[in-house]
Structure formats: structure tokens, C-alpha cells
Image 1 (cartoon, rainbow, N blue to C red):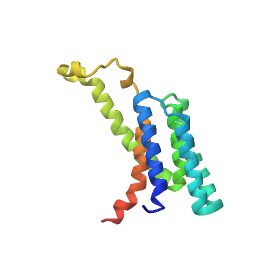
Image 2: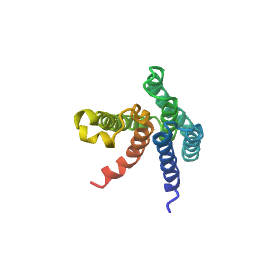
Image 3: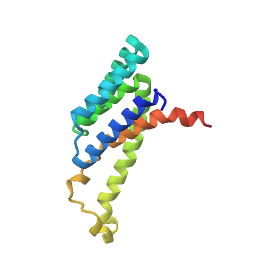
Length: 164
């Protein structure tokens, strides 16, 4: 296994754990966000020294700055904001902008899917037995999934572009 692949595998694994908790329990544990943050700081410092530390902090600040207003307006949970900030620490500021763009796109698709699922009993009454519209799990989109998918898409995108 390539040594540079180890941080990515850890990053992807932590994002998968965050996604699982967000879907199953509608919460992203602080230990997951902390682990992503620590991984981001360590990887950036090991790879680039003090410049890497500054890059990690800039990415963290950017992720926090962009997502915090949505928490203040009660449109997003605190775990989502912390996860995006931690992802920013791993990616650095430039890649964080790309990850935020991917997250917004994927989050929009997820939101639309949740809306369709919630409206299924109205649109097609046959689906009533398969969908419980009053379920609290359908009231909120697990945005941690969109953040994880956006961060991973940002990491995989350069590999896809190189193959063409």
C-alpha cells in the first residue's frame, strides 16, 4: 500500500463513520469531527511543515465561516458545521472551496430525494405503506452525508481528470 494512501483511507473511513451516525442517529459525534481535524492537522504539518499548519487552519476557518451562518439560522446542525470545518483542515483552503461546491450539489440532490420521499403519499397514494411521512427521520436531510460525499468527490476529482 502506498504510504500517501493511508491518510486518504483514514479520512474516507472517518467520513463513512460520520455519515453512518448522521443517517442512523441524526448526530455527528464530536470524536469523529475531532479525529478528522487531528488527521488534517497532522497530515498537513508532516507534508508541509508550518505552511501545512497554516493551510489546515485556513481550510478549517473557511469551512467554519461558510457553514456557521446556516447553523445560526437553524438550517443545519452543529455537527455538520464542525465536520465541514474539520474537512477543511484536512483539505486546505483551495480544495475546501471545491468540496463546498460538491457538498452543495450533492446536498441539493439529497434534499430533493428526501422531498420526493416525503411527498410520495400525496403524489402516489399506493406508496403510503412504504413511506411514513410523519417519521422524524424524514424532516431533516442528513447533511453529513453530503459533506462526506463532497469531500471525497473533491479528492477523487483530480484522479478522474487525469485519466481523460
